[in-house]
Length: 50
Image 1 (tube, rainbow, N blue to C red):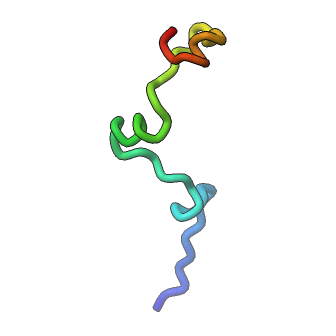
Image 2 (image 1 turned 180 degrees about the vertical axis):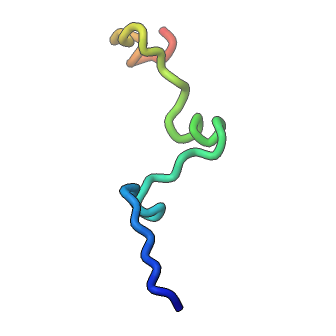
């Protein structure tokens, strides 16, 4: 056995949140992608597409 120690500034994979493997999994978890150009109004937040 060697005394080799690997050091990195990146946290271990078990600590980091898992990235989504595909777009469908992200959609199921968080819903559709929201536009960033203008904030959603109160009607859109209450009724969805309204």
